Length: 145
Image (tube, rainbow, N blue to C red):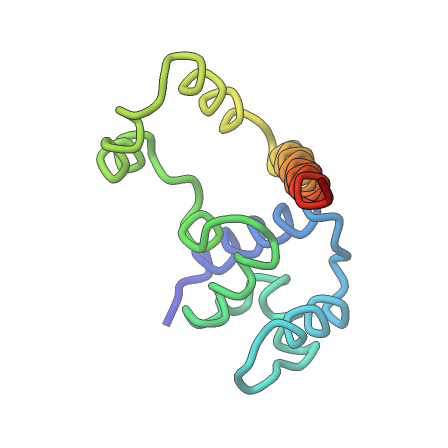
């Protein structure tokens, strides 16, 4: 079904994504964390080991769950980095709405390693959460008057 080169490359990307999320490379841990998120038939540690060792590649539905858990795109996990040309053509309208500073920020973000990107996403998520809490407190104070 897949040649060994594809399976090995997928395995390497999976390992990098796991490290970027701070997850263990243990097949038991991967199987447990995957099964917590997947609504279909659960996988065994042996299946996770096959993914990690480059013996097999998960089906598309499982790949999507892995990608969501590891906070990478399914295409990047399965095939590697998307070329800039493909990314540009699929998001031209989005890019047109960005100013120069935003575009530069995105280019810098994409030059970071997977683990560094995760840190940036975590910081942005924390700011969004703090902003939501702040807005809800301001709303509560406005109704108290």
